[in-house]
Length: 379
Image (tube, rainbow, N blue to C red):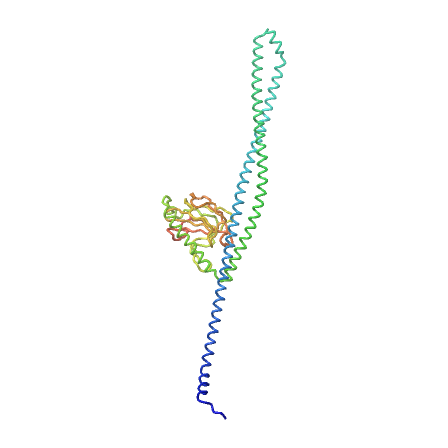
C-alpha cells in the first residue's frame, strides 16, 4: 500500500474545494450569456415591431393621400360636368328662342313679299311713262320704297338670326362632345375612388391589427396626441401675430356646428386606452361639407398622424379651431375664411373606422369644451 505524500494530499483537497467555485462561475456565465441573448432577441423584436408599425402608418398615410387625390379629381370633374350641363341647357334654350325668332321673321318676310307682289300688279313702268296721275305715282313709289326697306331689314335680321343659330348649334355640338368625354372620365375616376376607398379601409385594418398584436394602442394614442400638441404649440406662436381677427368670446354658445350629425364622443371622455379627449367627435356623411365655425384664417392644412387630413383656423385673440379626419382639404394656409364657408370634406382619414369629424377649439393653446361654444341643438 502506497502512502500519499503531504503535497499530493494538499492538492487533492484544494481541487475538491475549487470545483464548486468553478461550476458556479460557469453557470453564472451561461446565465449571463442567455440573458444577453434574450435582450438581443427582445431588441430585435422591438425593432421588427417598430418597422411593422411604421410600415402600417406609411400605408395608411399613402392610402389617405390617394383617396384624397381621387376625391379631389372626382369633385373637380363633377363641377366641370355641372358647368357643361348648365351651358348645354342655356344653348338649348337659346336655340329654341332663335328658331322661334327665325320662324316669325320668315313669316313676316313672307307677308311682305305677298304685299309687294300685290303692289306689283300695277303697271309701274306704264304709269311712269304716262305720268297722268302724278299723285298716284308718288304714292306707289313711296309704297315700293317702304316695302323694299322693310324687306331688306328683315333679310338682314333673318341672316343674323341664322348666323347666331349656326354658332349656337356648333357650340352645343362641341359641349355635348366634351360632356360625353367628361362623363367617361368621371366614371373612371369614380372607379379609382372606389379602389382608393377599399385600400384605405384595408390600411386602417392593418394598422389596428398591428397595434393590437403589439399591445401598443395606448402608446400610439399618446404619440399622436404629443404630435398634435407640438403642432398646435407652433401654430399658437404663429396665431399670436394675428391682430385683426376678433376671436370667439362674443359668439360663445352661438357658433354654428361644422357638420350636422350626432355626437360620437364628448369632450373629456376616455378614448381607447384611457386618454381623455380634448375635442369632440361628430358623426358625418362621408364627402359632406365641413364648414368654418367663424371668420378666420387657415394656418395649417396637412396630414397629421392619428388625425388624418387636418385643417386649423386662427380666429384671433388666441382662439383656434381644428377639424380632423377629413376626406380632403379645400383651402390652403394663408386663405381668409368667412363663417359658414366650406373648408373640407368629411371623411375617415387617420385610421378612423367610419366617417366622422374630430373637432377642437383652443383658447391660448388650451383645449376648451366645444359644446360650450357651439349653438345648442336638440338631438
